[in-house]
Amino acid sequence: MGGKVVHWVRHGEATHNPRAEALRAAGCTFDEFLEAMKRDDELDAPLTPRGQAQAAAAHTPARPPAVFVSPLSRAIDTALAIFPGARLIALDDLRERSGWLLNARRRRVAELVEKFPACDFGELRTEEDELWTEELESWESCGARGRAALQFVWERPEEEVAVVAHGGLFDAIFNRCSDIVAESELKPRFSNAEIRSTWVEQKEGVFHLRKLSGGREAAP
Figure 1 (tube, rainbow, N blue to C red):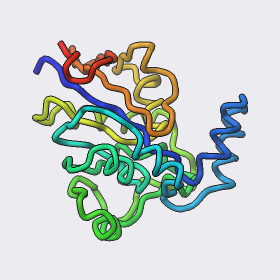
Figure 2: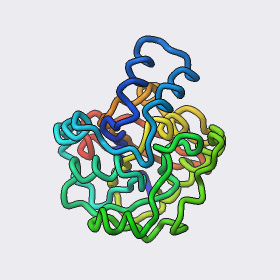
Figure 3: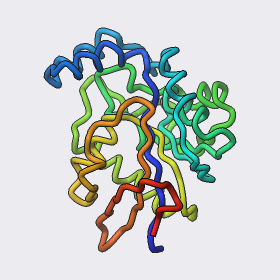
């Protein structure tokens, strides 16, 4: 395989985001950012009305045949809005940095199947969430999950796919994995409902990600 087009999408604004993102924009510390999310925390935090509008307004001409999503509700709802009719496949490795915050805890598979019948949950490893703990997941663990998810996507037959997930996970993928090399334009934090299109290649076990400005048509 020469390469693959991957469209990366962060979910729209969710209920734990408004206060925390405002503080982050004002220059707060990372610990203050986490504490702000903790104050607005809830299980599997859903999109806010603003987040729903962001997802509905997000525009891309891309229509990938497969969209890989975090099994957290805010990511699935974002994917459904941006890629209507696409096949959605949930992966536990695409979840946000887990632990401590309830917004990073996923629902039981049976609940998700009932709530999102259009999404394929067959790749989820366990019925219950066995990743989440009272302790915040390390960046190393989060990055390893992100790397595993990218490997899974790479080995799929589709030449163009989308990945809909989370800001923390994308930070780990683009900035904290020694065997993922991303162009500098891809490294800044994603805004809510932001889409970045990339050309992905793997050479000697290392992934190389290059930003595309024109979607699949701009791929080599």
